[in-house]
Picture 1 (cartoon, helix red, strand yellow):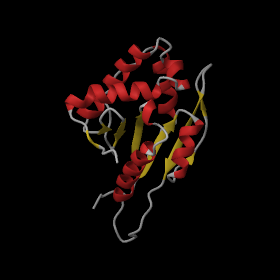
Picture 2 (picture 1 turned 90 degrees about the vertical axis):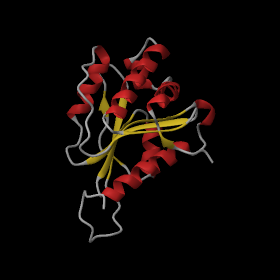
Picture 3 (picture 1 turned 180 degrees about the vertical axis):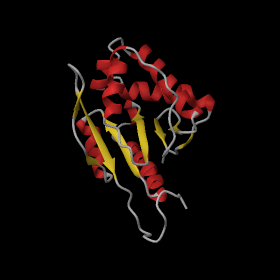
Picture 4 (picture 1 turned 180 degrees about the horizontal axis):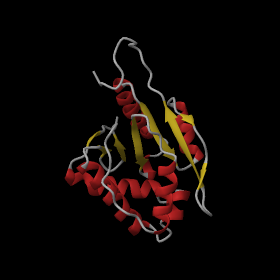
Length: 189
């Protein structure tokens, strides 16, 4: 079984390359980055570095799968984005929930390892953290296929967002599953 672990700064190129490969054929990604893989790899390098520096969740199974997420109340530093990337961010930000939550920015599996259950394992890791802390989990699925996987992990589709002259995206939300009603919310204890 493939092991996931927190990424170190030295792992960030692997995280970026894994996500770039996983998202290369993704319609919203192609809409934002029509120039292809080099721009996509630079994008994921920047995001992975900012998530890592902000104390976010950067996990990987080396050469196989990677995940970038933010815990409740963590934020990425402002990084203005031009063009379509900025348009996408503005559209997503306008619909982002305000309640405390884990925010799944990206998770992906290299093409040779897709359909092996790794995506579901990453989702399970994230939802376990949200359940532990009794907060929600949120993501914007870039395909309905990805949204269906999240639905199987307890997420619900909140709305469909349409990028200007581009493909749809599917925001999803998951309430925490609470097996201890006496524990205070949002404490992680």
